[in-house]
Image (cartoon, rainbow, N blue to C red):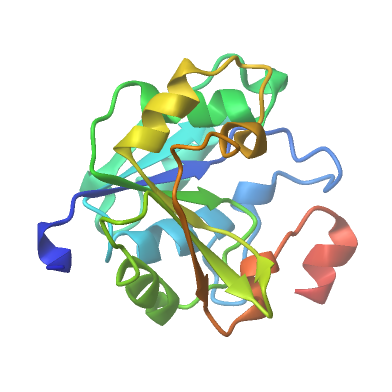
Length: 197
């Protein structure tokens, strides 16, 4: 498959309160001086045709932070006013007004994946599958690639559902890719997690 002909939309969720962190997670900085969200978006820009950033809490600060980076013309900001109702509502908000062949769904607390990871990840796209997920030692991680058919299932679901529940649908054909990096499990939820990072 010719990767250049794929239309991939990145979906990054930044809407939450970061309650356990005591700081606003998307705007925390790594050692390179860039925020979590800047690190993620900068790398996604190499493999995605557009990047939807779903905001909620402190939406203006997210937009201001990202407007300062290169390739910001690929960014589309979507405000989820219902963000307190959970992550699934943010995913639904991000998918509502877009039409793409593939979606790369990304959490904001995974800023350390390498650019090579993303290039290798999109090479796993295969029209026999509509859900592609990285694994390490057979354990599933994130981010996730899914196609427009899965998008439709997500949008048709109740806001009270979870993505895990949606994936029980028998029309979803999954491919698991052994990616050789534990960073697919990166989950920075607390101050201790950040210090360890």
